[in-house]
Image (cartoon, rainbow, N blue to C red; front, top):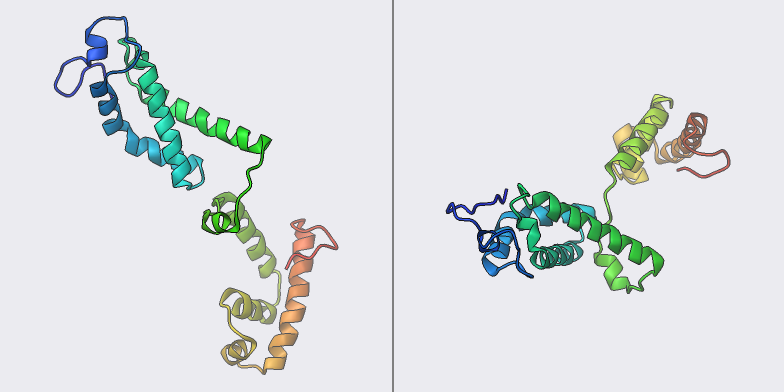
Length: 198
């Protein structure tokens, strides 16, 4: 953490001159803040922006600009500038989201193709658990054909070879297995009746 004293044991110039901070943080102090906090701050903001590195870098730059404009963040009353930096960064991310929600930005297909999809582990885990629970209710034949065709990505012919049955049987079992799976999902409340789940 960035304490009142630098690693050399001297107070940063902004503090050494007294309690009256200058209008801007001096270069040595802002450089010390950058060296100590930019890596962790960038990682934190990258997570908040769902992996959008460019947006994260913009937020970190704006955060450092605000630190430079507010040298009181290094005042003797504070133990560390870290909580202040992380709070400012978080608020900037929230402000950006609010601004985007008020006025949607137009993007080209090229931008959409390169934008990472946010990962929501909780939804993925719940979906996986729900499907596994529904699959457990199926017969062994229905379960095995769905595993071969959908989870292992095998063609009808490949699945037939793996299961030791004719291709027509794989098609038939797949059809009835999907119907049974849909019914199991409806019974568990995961899918409303009449909706297509699989």
